[in-house]
Image 1 (tube, rainbow, N blue to C red):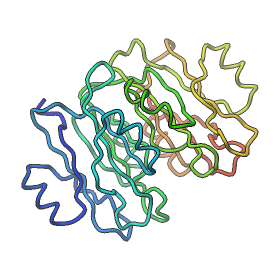
Image 2: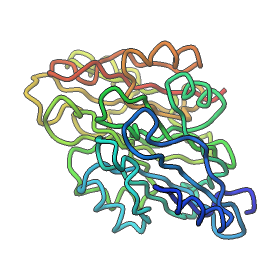
Image 3: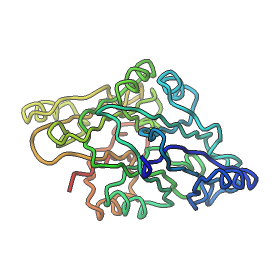
Image 4: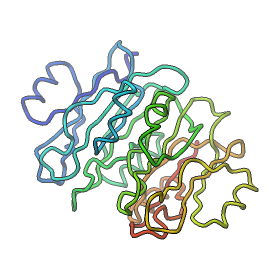
Amino acid sequence: MADHITDLDVSINQAEEIQLEAQDYTQINVNLNQGTKGDPIFLWYKKGGHQPITKLQLTYNNPMAGGLTAAGYIMINKNLNTGAGGDDIYLWHRKGTGKYNTPIMDIFVSTGYDEDAQYLGKGWERLGCDLNRNDPGAPSIHILVKRSEQTFICDVTATGTYRSDLNLFHDGYIRLDEDTNSDAGGADVFIWYRQTNDRMIAITDLRVSTIYGQYQEYEKKGYMREGVNLNKGTDSDNEVFLWAKKHDGVGIVAILLPLQKEAVLAFMKAGITVIEEDLNAGTKGSLEYIGVRDWC
């Protein structure tokens, strides 16, 4: 287990940096408040002989935390946006076992879409929430992780309430911690996925429908509609759904949300497929795409 990450912490001042260094933590030398008015904040990790961390999640509101607490996730009680003016963002982790839990062996903090694309192209995963969320003018900052072996996405769904969070976390799902209705109004809608190292049960294709006429087309081709309307609760007449298919191609290893217009080129250059169906179709929300990366 020596190569796996077993402990995580966050420093929000110099005194905490000194304390964590004395405890043999390693600092990721990227200021999580980069480009903001906040004080420097850093993420720290430790590798050792204890049980490895297998899941990371981020929260930016109180309802997102309920299922995590009940499912045994541990919150690092340091706001990653301290003093910056954006949302209060917290990092959570859990040490799980079983086929839906693969140890995390490395962690990185990116400061832009080009860096995201570079690491994603090398097999890393990106957490959904921008650490500078709702901080106008600040750069995009994301946490990425590298697992001990290749994983494949085997299940996907979407929820429009928080009632099923506990069951999904218990069942090994990872929540993409960004609301698909983030600036469109309506319910808080999240996409979830579950991953395994068994390529034979991997999802091989994802699609998005934005009009009813696409339903029949996808059903005839063997796609299954997954989860709730991604525009649930908005004032739009459009219903937007996620569709998944297995056993027809290589496995999908990563799902990315959101992909704004300015990020599309960088991700496509890294071999990431952009599903060019606007998740905010028919709403007041800004253009928003899903990206997927296939196994190479």
